[in-house]
Image (cartoon, rainbow, N blue to C red):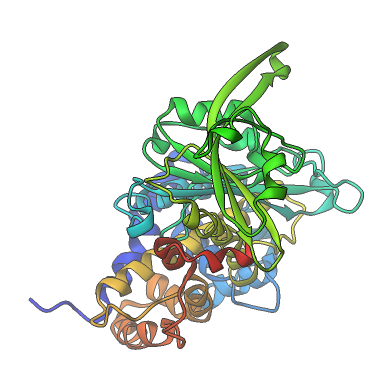
Length: 434
């Protein structure tokens, strides 16, 4: 039987924002205490897909979006009173479920990075909040930002899709938010110097994972193994001046202490140091990793680390296209609802992207995630109408969406390689912007 036009679009939408699931969770959490004019399914849908209304996101614009999509007139107080801790918990659980579902069966990188089960990228981004939330969300930069939240993400590098998410006060340090578990077994974690900690390195190794990160400027490792026996026993800084213009690698001893636990004894981890010569800066770029030379050759390390830039692009996508940075309310519950609404919009976009990709005949056509989110933002009013509008108009709307999404989402510059493709090919010039 032929598939109905646009049915994959509606299936993708309802898999993230299922009316039955939302009603069941809302009843269990106490979001709906008695039936009034506000429908919880339409409310959640309007919060997630209503970000395109107005120059900036506001509670008033979201209320107008709800009224336009449902044909219901609401007093401002009747709408604002819905932003409760119970609604925030509903949005939080929907977000965790959505990204848990997206994590199943995701694409892995191949070729140069095919030795790893997955390639993960970890980082956090600070989101400015209303100053009155300082007690609940203290900021790390109190001189110009009294309140902030930190979105910490562990992302699949192949799809730029978050798999682990945490929203915490902005004062928390990134390294304390990366909880190592069975998910990293056989995977490669790529992160920046915010995670440069021996205790974390040891946890990743004990869990059967690998990591790749840059080296701090003040580090001076003892070389324990190298292609030349003359290097053994020397410090790596001595070699940098003699290896100008050359890429080299060596086994080094990484020593660290558990000072917060009042354990001052040194522990040692054998690691691999890769020094990649960068022709633009006329200097070496140093990387630490647990990966063998067979699985990660030295000449592909820079391109692999450049894949870390994907998570910066994810944060830019969330803040510019999905309004994550627009937090207009001083209400804690409303702020948490809006944070989760932006993340759910991202989940819908990734789900739709997969659905459209599966239906494309020309597999060479690339659909870049950020371009896709810009398209999704433009299509949000139509997507909202598909979810909560009259069923009679749904077929025509889906047919219109089906015809335009694949065409408009394609990258007009088809010869341009995206960062995951560069990392797979091991193109060292990809590291120039990292």
